[in-house]
Length: 163
Ligand code: SF4
Image 1: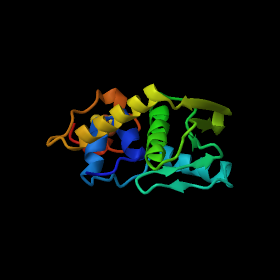
Image 2 (image 1 turned 90 degrees about the vertical axis):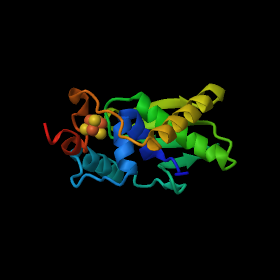
Image 3 (image 1 turned 135 degrees about the horizontal axis):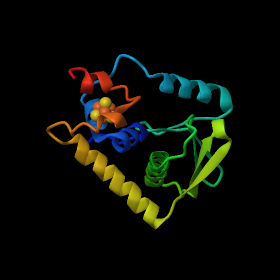
Image 4 (image 1 turned 45 degrees about the vertical axis):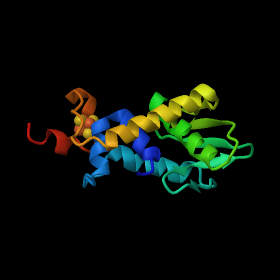
């Protein structure tokens, strides 16, 4: 069974079809500007951080007391970001770490969001992971989203190129 990392959770919650395509090896040639910009923010904002590489997921950094940190270049905090951090908490916990909680950093708007880690959060993370596995194992591609929700998706040519 494939390992589920942060990118899988992100794609699932954006669009299950995106996750499904990604897992079948489809990689759009072009990187979106948003991705490049995000990497630039990562490079310049937190130069002293240390990644925590779990293999299937790369966590931005973890501080004393096992607080999971994630940096986002977005100006809009979202449930998708929180789900990604919950997934990291789950992965760390499975490795025997007593996780306190998560913190999402939004340097462009100088904000942080705390992501709780407790029983309900764990159940939510497990459910999301299960959804990802169910989506990946589907024999057929999940349906496309409504087109207006595809804006900015790097798979847009693949999904909509013929229309
Ligand atoms: S283009 Fe739309 S339907 Fe296709 S993967 Fe992206 S969000 Fe999903």
